[in-house]
Length: 317
Length: 317
Image 1: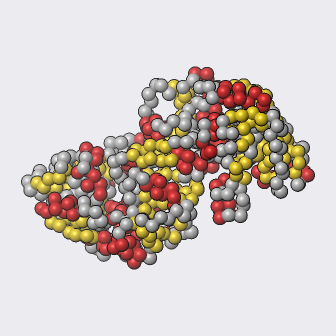
Image 2: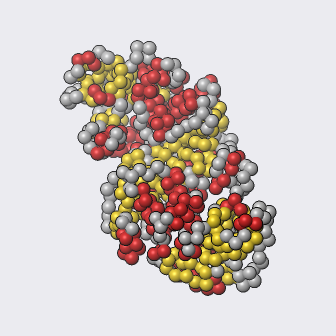
Image 3: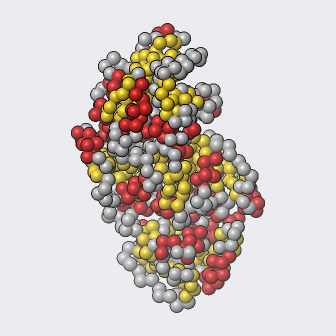
């Protein structure tokens, strides 16, 4: 089959081996997939991953031990857990130490004709949700994870730092709380997307140190995120770190302790609410689509996705 | 009056001006005071403080606008807030941006014959609590603050890093939760104090990377605290940073985000529950007293307090 590999540099392979279906898993024909910043990081060496890239997808079940799944259009939770270890039994399968992660760790991903995932990971896509919406279910779930971890109140002042695809999706999800939400970014065209959603927007190059935000969500991926966020956060406020990248965050101890800040790392989230938001039309990420490439042009697609300021690049499989 | 000053180095003054009583405040004759690591940091330049040091004390009210306070033995909340700003009105006077802090910022402290504090800050010490217990009310309140901020469950595995006076007091407070509590430290004699309280103890020099703790409380004051704590913390666990000191904490971004850790800065806490715990005998910090000096020997007391491994040094005023 065709596949786009991290080997360890990016490589398109027109004759990659088709996956062998493990018990309890479904064989899925990928329809549409999205390139995430994590994919760019993986190609740059993050996690030392080798194999098929891609973890944002929508596809169709081709083969499954439970035949009721066959033919269904699905998205999937990318973390495949063991469900028998202490962490899984404590209700945290996303943190299973034995987990594999689609296109990230120990498991081939979605930039290929086929992938496999456990049936337990699959979610049927409602008919009303077209592929170009469903492909955002995984990153939107990651945005929903913030709401799983932190209680955002309707009266809160919330700032999202970063107008990349993650920051915009986070803003799209968090605006639904009714909170007083501001997106801080660098690109007028991207800020305009959020402004159309009714989100306040601010240019990052205009200094703004209100120190009045209850919650700041860091989506820039810059190691100086803490210092930026600290200027905005009120004492006893919460900083959510959403960017997955390789590096170190430098935290001013005195600020953290004296101001009693809380810092929360946030990763993958729940797909079911993400699909509900997409189906209800409460989140419409289609303005984030910058381009769609065929899988065979995957290398060009990655080059495009890596350009500064480019939003979501999709791969039509 | 006699006073021990940060000027900016440590200096004993036998003829320092007595405080002028501001409206709404009480004049307090200090009886006993404790030296905290923050005092050592202040003398080293932290916060740029100048004035009378000391924020752990028990004293007797000499003068107050409300005469019912006169003669009472009291401890005091060290943060004097404005009670009219947005932060105060939101119920966070400890984070009032206009606050002064006894012996730390903008307000002379307790290592002197007299201090003043607002009446609103005072708590009457029950008769059953002697001075050498009451003097621990402030640092014990700081330990209680952890329980204000983080829900510790009786089934949690909790690790306290650091067997200094703060780490020991934190262990003394957290053991009351019924949680499976371990104190990690460097000194056999200090660990023995915690062991007598029924706390599990471990030597810091014996590597222990269980990654099974639900909550880790960092009380070592070392900038590598995050790395140490990370070895012990389970995914989605909580790291409480309790050490107030000047420096930067280096946080592995990938660990924070992939493992969805929460980092909570923690400072001053509520005095009323601290007094209740002392009165009930549930916390007895007297084994932490290393020495008691007269105020006039304050410089010797500071030298002693700064020696490695020395626990609480008190000043008899």
